[in-house]
Every structure is written in C-alpha cells, then in structure tokens.
Amino acid sequence: MGRPRLLLASTLIVLLAFSTRSARAQVWTNYPSYNDLASQFLIPQNQVRASVGEPPLVWDPTLAQYAAWYASQREGDCALQHSGGPYGENIFWGAGTGWNPADAVNNWASEAPDYDYNSNSCVDGRMCGHYTQIVWSSTTRVGCAKVVCDGEVGVFMTCNYDPPGNYVGERPY
Image 1 (cartoon, rainbow, N blue to C red):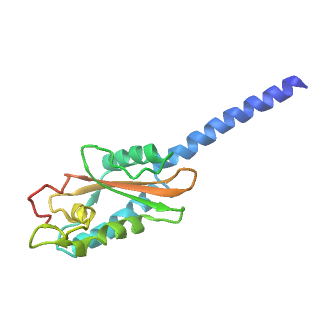
Image 2 (image 1 turned 60 degrees about the horizontal axis):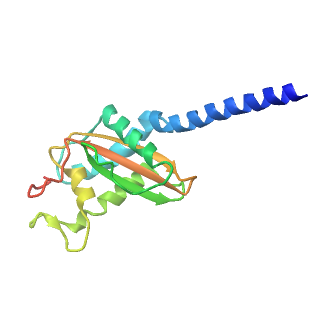
Image 3 (image 1 turned 90 degrees about the horizontal axis):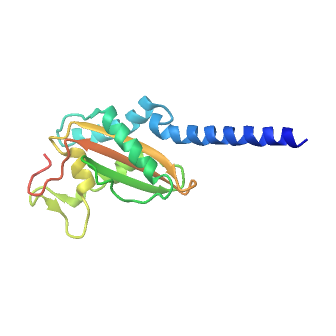
C-alpha cells in the first residue's frame, strides 16, 4: 500500500510541475493565440497613429518576446514598473482579469489631450508620454504581451517600441 501511494504522489508532482510550466509558457506563446493577441495590440495603436498622420507600426516578434519575458517577471507581483530595457515601453495594470489589449492602448491614448503640440510638452501635472510613444514618428516596430498576475489580482500588459521615442526636445510627429 505504501508503494502505490508513493507512485501516485510522484505522478502528481510530475503533473503539477508540467502544468505549472505549461501555464507559464502561455506568456511566451501569447494567449489566446499569437496572431490574435498581436492584432489586439496593433490595430488600436495604428488607429491612434493614423489620427495624426503617422504610418502604421509593424509587429516585431523580437520585441514581443522581450515584452513576454518582462511580463513574466511581473506575473508574481503585478508591479507597475518599467523594465529598464533598450526599447521604448508602455506598461499597464488593471485590477481583475477582464482587461484586454485595447483597454491598455485606450488608456495610453487617452493622454492625447494632455499633450500640447505647440509647447511640445505635457499639460502641467498631467502625463502624456504613453501617448507620445505610440505616435512617435521614427518608431516603426512594436511587440507586446499580457499576463494575469499575482494570483488573478490583475492583468499586466506591456508594449515595447523600436526605435524608441520620447526624446527630450524632439516632437513626436
């Protein structure tokens, strides 16, 4: 009787290890599907760019992989902090699990009224850098990722941009 229990316990441990690995792998393969997730991030950002006459961004798998790697770092804590990497970056966190990529992009794009083109700055006391990164004229590629974090407390999303934008003294478009 001890041997069957040991075998059962060993089997459960192995299955648990693989199921944990598989759940984490969803970040790397992007869920629900890679192309669907890419479109959910890409289409609304390109609509924002079109509104100021900028050409569309293209999806970059290398940037998406970097974004997925960083999102996986935030999976345990949902911390709204930048990666410090070599790319331009927008990050988003929302409580609960019902957030989708368009929500993140809409949040970033909602800063548009807070950007004053004439002074090339944000309105006093407001943020506009997420918006300006989306519309930055020299940026041509984007890759993004989404992860449910901190035991389903929230959703963390990040997009990385190359070449990066938001250079002091330069206009986004």
